[in-house]
Length: 255
Image (cartoon, rainbow, N blue to C red; front, side):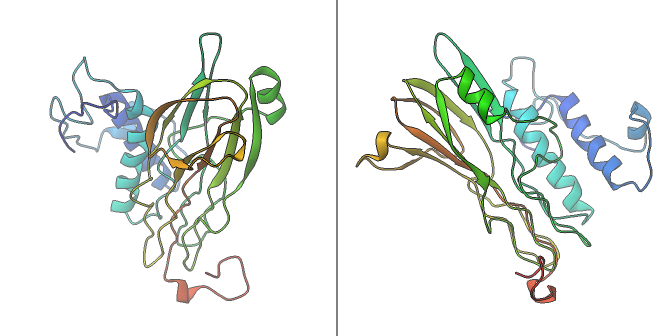
């Protein structure tokens, strides 16, 4: 691991334990009750004040929703179990003095030795569902312009990674917007010759489709947007598994 971060990506020790126990249980070909005994054979080396065992004053919100996912990536890759999933929850919040809204956005799942990755799903350290479009637009001053799969964002391979999603929201009045996400610089890895998934993007589009530039917000940002501006989140695809040449042509697994 690394030293404790000044950012909010520190993962409390309990979150680190949870990510590891999830990964190990997923590798076992048998059902077992979730209990502390599952970790009896595991030795953790977590120095005080590190990213995965921070001090009491460390900021930790990103540790639960982002760093935990990357711990899962590390464990599953060490065992060669499957390619990386989107490695993120794409945490989006927006609001003003009168309301607040928070959602997490799905992406692509990694492929494995005998399966293609699922598209447009949450994976690993999350279990949230997104708000129905009708409810979102009725309760909040926004319009959901696009919510679809992000075609061809999964990595190629004998088994393809799942595709991410495209989610575009238009804000009907000035709004504070925050995005906390990962896999915007380094793509989800492929395995056994499979190709990586496509990296995510967070784009701010000018109001009314005007002449202003489309701005990339990076992985983590806070912005105040004007009425009519749109946020387009393109979530990462999952990595592919196996060399693309091994894929059979004409099927869902072909590159």
